[in-house]
Length: 148
Image (cartoon, rainbow, N blue to C red; front, top):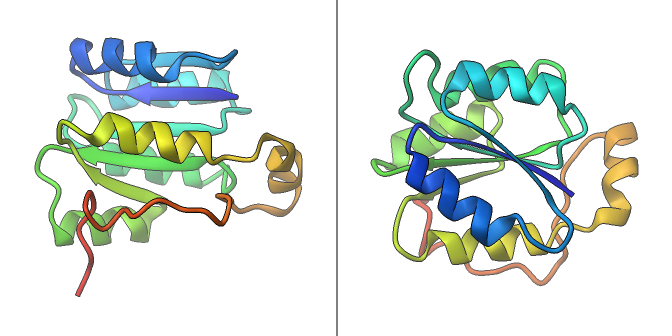
């Protein structure tokens, strides 16, 4: 499994690499949206893209839009310390699969989401599009904002 993390905060990138970059996972980091897009182009076989919203040079929504032009299969998770209903709606409209508020327990939610990806389905997703999570999903309502 290959995970790309895009965040301008070096501490966030380091923490996520320690927590998510285990069990044979390939972890690729970028410090802003433009670098994140370049990393994604270098690693088009990535299974997961985790991006912050507020970053220099290119924000997370612009990054998601660029990635979705050519790839519908990758799971995209938008993070923000300022997540609200409007940002979540915009994120999902542009192509984010999940939108999470940066909270102390966000790492645990990310770990659960990533552990639910079924690697054997990755090839099928590339052929037919779409990201799947096993049925035993975790309750995200505690960590995301629901659109009304």
